[in-house]
Amino acid sequence: MRVLVVNAGSSSLKLRMLDAHDTVEQSADLPAGTDGFDTSRLGEILRAWGKPDVVGHRIVHGGIIFTGPVLIDDAVLRQLRDLTDLAPLHQPKSLAALHAVTAELPAVRAVASFDTAFHTTIPAAAATYAVPREWRQRYAIRRYGFHGLSHAYCSRRAAQLLGRPAADLRIISCHLGAGASVAAVLGGRSVDTTMGFTPLEGLVMATRSGTVDPGLVLWLEEHEHLSPHEVTTALEQRSGLTALAGTGDMREVEAAVDRGDRDARLALDVYTHRLAGGIAAMSAATGGIDVLAFTGGVGEHSAVVRRRAAQRLDFLGVSIDPQRNDSAAGDQDISAAGSAARTLVITAREDLQIAREARHLLAVS
Image (cartoon, rainbow, N blue to C red):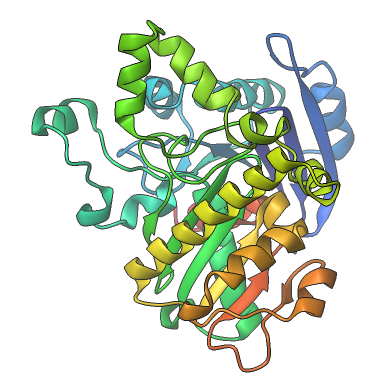
């Protein structure tokens, strides 16, 4: 079954055509335009690729409604639009991509896969905020978690690489890209994650602050007379590595550290301090670590970040081989000999997870 995977990101629309064996037949990245994605070449591209059997869409937010993949119809579309308030920066882009591709392939069945769905197994103790009951009930306030498609694939792939059932493993999955989160995966199911009600909670990211004291937000609004929009924009777009080092690109941060830049050194210190703390916190949810997996652009390519995080986690049995870490490429075990926990680098393949979910749904529907 050929699957066209549609992944709407913050800066581009990624298209991948996978054959029945998950080989990438074709791929294209369409840049974001002024009013959304530049889809002027979309029809030409899809006609050249040929008709898929199914289209799999990455949708960021499924709320409490969607706990797994779903066939898209008019009723589902209405529900997805209603969830926009929970993800105003991401959901419109996902829906724009869905509408553009559907217009070109109206007769092809489409499946939505959700970044939040993997985390719907998180127990109430981890998902519940200690805020008034009426807020939680009226507004569906809870910790949703994100990057679920990446964490689901990463944990499944980790089990494959080790030749062990996922049900037997305590896996800590680190998705480190422009956005970043850590997930605790126990027996193949998410039991905790660092992101919460929005993708702003948790680790330091490229332009996002990660967790800050909510009192700080209230203080800024009251004492500096900043509007909620101004605070949100600052925390989403002008914080994180960008605020500390002047760039959200970890490669540039590391290069600046090598030149002796003090701001870049602080940025790297803060980033890895929060990362190690997040991993340790997730290990409390799994009761220890059998596998620590790094994925995403930074997770796959920054030997410095992996090394600095691992150095703080030796008390959890994490130890990496310096040579393996420095030369890691693709899916690779970088554990030191005798390490109690295995440390893996895994190529991010959300497309494979989306295709898998689409095929499975059609097989059982």
